[in-house]
Amino acid sequence: MAAETPVRTLIAPAEMTRRTGRFLYRFVLVATLTGFTIAFVFPLYWMTTGAVKSSSELADPNPTLFPESWHPESYTEAWTNVGLGQFFLNTLVLALGAWLTQILVDVSAAYALSKLRPLLGNVVLGMMLATLMLPVSALLVPTYLTVVDVPLLHVNLINTPFAIWLPAAANAFNIFILKRFFDQIPAELLDSARIDGAGTLRVLVSVVLPLSRPVLAVVSIFAVVGVWKDFLWPMLVLPDEAKQPITVALNRLSEFMPANQLLAGMVMASIPLLVLFLIFQRHIIAGLTAGSLKG
Amino acid sequence: MPPSAPRPPAGARTGARAGNSRLRRAVRENLVAYLFLAAGVLCFALFSWYPIVRGVLLGFQQVTFAEPARWVGLDNFRRLFEDPLFLTAWQNTGHFTLLALVFGFAAPFATAVVLNELRHGRPYLRMTVYLPVMLPPIVTMLLWRWFYDPGPGLFNSALEVFHLPAQQWLESENLAMVSLVLVSTWANMGTTTLIYLAALGGIPGELYEAAELDGASIRQRLWHVTIPQMRFILMITLLLQVIGTMQVFVEPFVLTGGGPDDATVTVLLLLYRYAFVYNDFGLASAMSTLLFVVLGLFSVVYLRLTRSKG
Image (cartoon, rainbow over all chains, first blue to last red; front, side, top):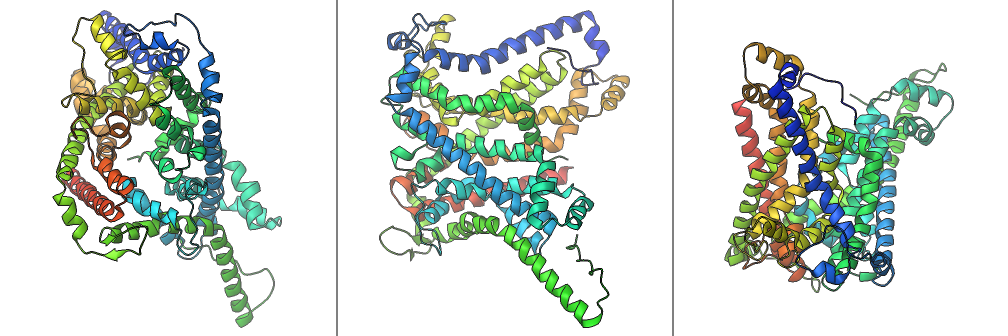
């Protein structure tokens, strides 16, 4: 790992190069590296290898650092016999659908608010942003009752993926960061596209969206991650066991499944997000700091 | 900014006709704009704005699936206060929030300050501290339930290596809440750490240089430069953390189910039971209204206090 370009921080470069400074620095560095590895990487190692241990090895009160005997079949058993494969695919459908709905709904809303600027647009935006102030749990019961019987339409969304997708689209944070990004796109660019004969939708698709790749990446990642991690809401609105995502299924089955298969299921539920993180680290961290308010 | 006025067409139209077409064009542009906005507004109306209003009303109603909602005034609130678990739940939640502040506020700040000083391995450390955030919370809880297991659990095995007595992590009334806070801190500190790290990177180096010239020690620089510079972000994360931890649910739901002896029944766990175990949506809504009022009051008081100090 290469050293980063030094920027003046709390500790002066001179203090670092003194003998005690160098010693202390090395000590802290080694302590942090081992501490972090034990605290944050080791549990993942423990989970992944636990899944390939035999049941008797798992139940032994003296844990083994390396599996004595390898049983990778617990992964395939969990996938097929317990049916985690189905639950995994359910999650995939829920996450991709939520991603698509959020992109379609929130991008077009942000485009309207940023570039088309309808009358009362700022009022609508304000009402959307106001929902960010509300604790999520305050809306749990009324939103659930709304999903059971959608007003005006009188349809019941329980056990349908729409119960996940549609509430997810009402995402003020997405609209806010999308709008803020669209605001930076110069109006001249849009005007010149208009002069070339592009309609409103065409301007969005061929001018605005290609310029917005970074913010679209952030919104997409957070959409998928959010639905993938969710537990309480899908547990409430998808009581039909065959339709549940893997998070809900794992909790329900955790009492009955053999320990190694449960661990295998936990690994499966985590892998997509961990892979996503390893690929899109930069975008995720950028999104984090975009979300935090800057003073 | 006002909506951009449509430009008059390049032709030589004048007078009333021009005014008329300008109006028509403005109407059309607004129509198009609202067409793009429609899906968003509809989603918000159905799943956000309407539930907000309804949530407040529900607190004063008796709701069953069988018959239409009936107004019962303050009856739900009276029943809440009569429930002996109500006070326990608030106490437990307060306990959790306080403990979570002690761990969850100090740990990410210290971590970020240390990471910001390190010249090696920072990408690795930044990545590892965020790994737990990417795990689905249910996986984190099941994983820690296994670590806490009194039999083959990792924690008691580790204690045994150091000849320390085994602990009843989740089964002891004194320790259960601490165990929940530990998981919660482990799972969530990555986010705050990275936010702090970004903020630390924005502190101008000259401030440290100037303090150093004035003879300030490292500790004094931390106290007089770093912390004041981070004041705003620290204030906001404290506020958000209190609001977040007051709504703790998954930890007690999966790890303890509220036990032992109701020691980890939290406000949201009780709310969940009211609504989805007893199907008493009115009672649950009264509870969420109270939670909302408490959190709102806290935010207002907190912002007042911190603003008047600055």
